[in-house]
Length: 128
Image (cartoon, rainbow, N blue to C red; front, side, top):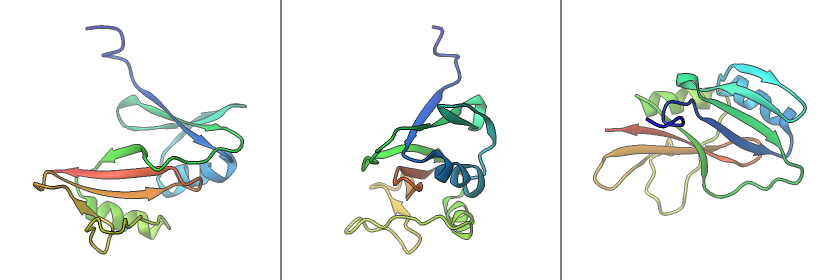
């Protein structure tokens, strides 16, 4: 096993305004704040992984998912996040249900997408 195979991942999400994004990740998503410095706020993810919200002036979000979570019950998770003000994206012609949940061809997974205050795309996936 190489050194990285057993290492905890650290992911980075760029934000134009960390003070605006921090309450979303810590409050609405319920991620624990591990620390903050002049460059980023670090939040806990499952299994020892972390995410760093990193300031990048003028940041414009991409159209692709930058971070996602595997959840055991996507419908319940969507409901809980909506109750906290999270808005789920509906993509025209994708065939999502009223909750924004899409079932992959073959039914192997259910996926729902939402965005953070910067427009970064985040997702939930429930695997069959």
